[in-house]
Every structure is written in C-alpha cells, then in structure tokens.
Amino acid sequence: MKLIIQVPCYNEAETLEIALNDLPKHIDGIDTIEYLIINDGSADNTVEVAKNWGVNYVVNFKQNKGLAKGFMAGLDACLRNGADIIVNTDADNQYCGDDIEKLVRPILDEKADIVIGERPIDNTAHFSPLKKKLQHLGSWTVRVASHSDIPDAPSGFRAYSREAAMRLNVVNEYTYTLETIVQAGRTKMAMTSVPIRTNPELRKSRLFSSMFGYVKRSTVTIVRSFMMYKPLKFFGIIGGILFLLGVTLGIRFLVYMFMGSGNGHIQSLILASTFILMGVQTFIIALQADNIAANRKILEDVQYHVRKLDYDSEKDKQEQK
Image (cartoon, rainbow, N blue to C red; front, side, top):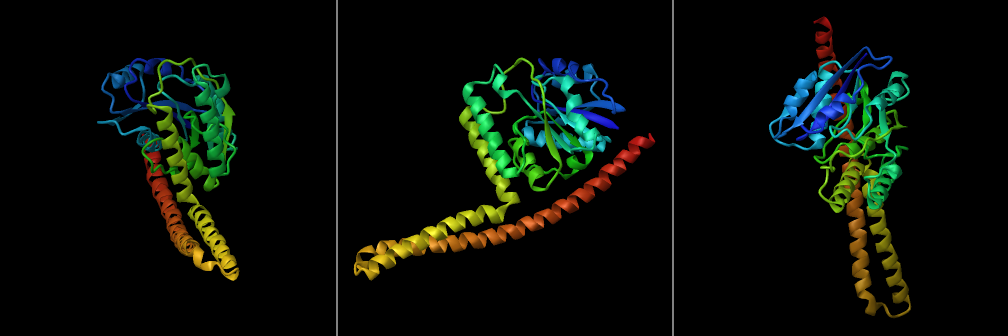
C-alpha cells in the first residue's frame, strides 16, 4: 500500500521545509510513504528547498495556474506513480502532519474513499469572527448542494483512495475544495470527515485578496457545481417560480376582468404572459441541460475507464522496476 502526500506550492520557500518536516515517515498499514510537490510557477527557490529536503516527485508549472489546476495535476502525478492513497496538505504548515494517520485510516479500513479533515474553526485564533461565520455558512451550503454531512467544506486537508482520485474532475479555476465535495456527494462516493488539529499561522492566506472576493468565488463555484450535477432541479425550480408568478398575475387579471375593470390592468396581462413564457422556456432549458448532464455522466465513466487503464499500466511498470 503506497501513500503519496502532495503539497501545492507557490513561493513557499520560507515555510515549505517546516511543513515537510511535520509530515509522517511511517503509518501502520502503509508500506511506502512518498512526497510530491506541485510547483505552481514559483519565483523563489521553492523547488530547491523541496529537492534538498528529499521529496520524491516535483510537478512543475512554468507560470501560476491556480490551486484547482495544481491539485488535479498533483493527483494525476500521484496516480501515475502508483499511489493507492493520496493526501493533500498545505505548504504553510496549517495542518498538523500527525493527523494524516487519522485521514487515511477510514480508507485503510475500507469505510470511505474520501476523507476530509474538520478544522476546529471556532477555536482557531487567526480566523476573524466574520471568517468563522462565513466558513460555517459555506460548509452548510455545500452540505445542502451535495447531500452530504461534511462539516468543513473549505478544508484542503484531505485523503483520497485511488478509486476516488480517478473519478474526480475539477472544471473551475479557483479551488477544488467545494466542487469535489459536490461532485462526490452527487455521484454517491463514500465520503466522511475526521477532526484534525491546526498549527499557528505562519503567513496570511493567498487564496483570496478579500472576504468579498472569497464569498463571490465560492458562491459561483457552488452554484455552478449544482447546475452541472442537478440541472433539471436547478432550472426546474427557477422555471416553476416564473411560471407560478405568471399564473398568479393571470388569475389576478381575470378577477379584475370579471369585476368589469380589466381594461385598467392590461399591464398585468402582459407581465403574466411574459412570466409564463419565461417559465416554459426555462423548463425547456432544464430538459436540455439534463440531457447534457446525462451525456456528461457517460463521458466521465469513459474517462474513468481510460484513466484506470492508463494508471494501472503505469503502476505495473513501477512494480516491475
């Protein structure tokens, strides 16, 4: 059983060694632990620090591509190098390395394919009161969208089985944390969370420049994911609301017409017709989007089997060396 711990990096020369030193060298049930960094276009000597420390693999981007693309590139490299379990952690040593054993245990016990670390958000000193509330709100929204019970959706401290990693797809360019939970929940992957500890802050977060920017991007990611995996429900609700508004205004006009004052409420009739047409058109869009989603499932299944053949072939080569 091979575990590869991947660490996305962007100008992390000052903190990377601290984070790497905190990672475990042995876990019961794991035969081999290896380490991989994703160098996301760093301008400092991040790669030198990683190589001097002794990381096994380096994924290099010539320019910064963002957390989501780095995460997926890391998964791909881990799978190609024979990982049975992949753990993602941060280069700023936010998470306690000893808790990686907690993350992988449900996978080793075959109880889950995805395990997400639950941070003690309310007890984290460097989180402002506003950030704590937004973290809870965002996690609640993701739970609703994904039909899951993950309490800390934005947590980047997580473990994936080989099977789960091969099924993941991230299409947004911002972050993988929210979209992968929605995807896993909607496709019925076995997913759970475990309580983990955090370390004192070494640097400020670089994921977003302002709280408003974080909220805006997170909202777009959640809505987009919901549209992708449940389009009939998403557009159907919107279409139903518009149609009901039109019907309500239409009934209102008919009431006034039977009372003999319909001529003074022609605007209501026009507005009712507009809402009804918008509702019907939105429902047609819902049907079309549902067909696209069905095709997407077929493509994802094909992609999974292609990945499986590719990665299993690479794993066999690794074992033969």
